[in-house]
Image (cartoon, rainbow, N blue to C red):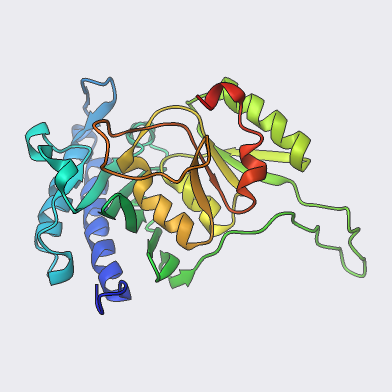
Length: 298
């Protein structure tokens, strides 16, 4: 961290370059049908050659990152061997990595998968990179530096959008003060669909019309950070490497990622690396939390 008080754009770009190299390894597998075999891990989640190739690329690149402030930090990855994580809770800093977030989306060939790299200090995620290998678009952020969308057009600062959304008048018209754009949810295709339906019903009662769009991986949280969605409710299991990087992006863009009882997520402080349900929102978190199904607050 350049001056001891925050990160620099150059440091963030170094970590982005690591994610981009992993993305190239993933796309090499994506393009080669002979490497599409899928294994099943002990937790019944899928594993592909792309997961392993990205893991090895990230681990090697972070070990050789070339910045003294980012060097020598252990890696906590979804694909780390258990022996590599021994004593992890005593680490003052660590990289929390999902080499391929959205393996099921990778298998479905829909392009909605990402490389997630976060730096955790103490129990707080303080730097995050979410890179889309298929699109080439990334979301990056660091504490005190802000949040950015990075594409062929360069680095663009992003910000959540506020509620309510006044409707835009047509040419020569004046919008009614009561007219609002529907709130937008981005949601999972596969997890917690029954509870999601109950949440959507409560949101409609609290906010008015609702639209929902299904998407994959950490891009759902990044959609809230970018102002393309107002809320991402997650019902169902995730792990710390699924949320850490995107949480930094969202919070630096002005939003919140909270548990069902309203606490921000912390990292690498528990025996388990599994997360509970959560809510990613751009504004008015208390109103959104009030819509949470009661059976999810335990």
